[in-house]
Image (cartoon, rainbow, N blue to C red; front, side, top):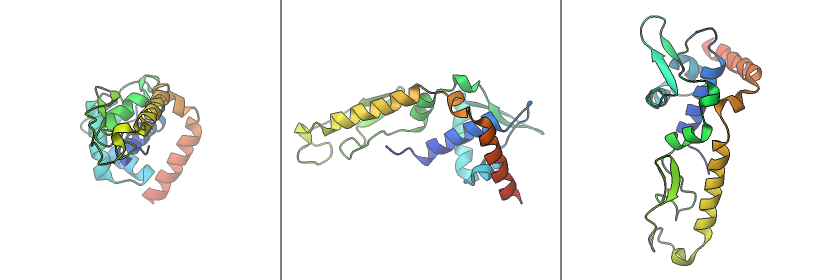
Length: 168
């Protein structure tokens, strides 16, 4: 399974917000976009959704910006991915059938001709890949943002280095 850039950028944004701002300092979308060399426009949509979902908070006005709304140990990676990914189809026969509903991955609306595949009604491959997808999400569920920040000093050094390169 390949995650979308949307999920990737959401994770990277949360990592940035957990590592960079210190002592009440707020970040902004430009900072994050420059640090990762990603589109500010696309990132704005992601930051907006992360705010609506309660992962980040924004402060308006002079000196405003964004920061994490909760402790990194309270941000579950699996839950975040379920919020940012809408389709977990791995195979063509699972596309549009393996939906993210109510933060659970489930096979829905499987019909005998779901993919136009001749063997679909008798094929057990879809079940195998569905189990694999559930295992993938279970692993993500077992980790928080804090778990992936154990090397925060290294992350900080790399982000600072890239920020310096892109702002010169």
